[in-house]
Image (cartoon, rainbow, N blue to C red; front, side, top):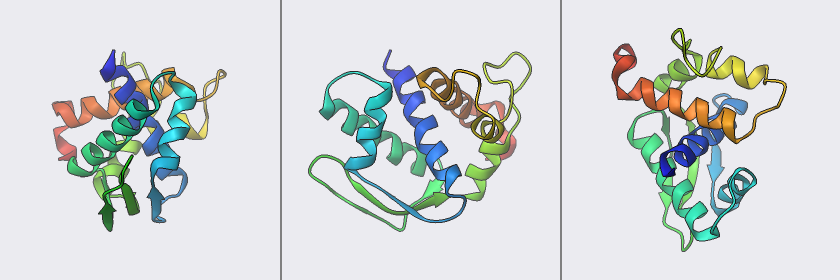
Length: 140
């Protein structure tokens, strides 16, 4: 299902930003290829999904970028960093019965026994999507 893959990509991107704190980073075609470790498939689809998810995360206000340069395969995001809204989301505690036992931040810091695979990234992305979808309106 496409949305599951998009949730995995959200988790992967936000994990990378969380690892850097508030330091600005760049995202490009090279980063999108790292997602291939978690998904088999067409390289062009991986680039397109990575690009679209990054644009969505920016549009939703979780991250900002100093500039976005259009690329042939994937855009180049310069100076990407978490916003205060993004920090609130990664620190939010999931509700009872959630697929995640801990906040996104704690899940990254103390990974489950199996590590941070596609399933964990998918749960993180689903949680983030749920917050933005409405049950966490206090973050808006």
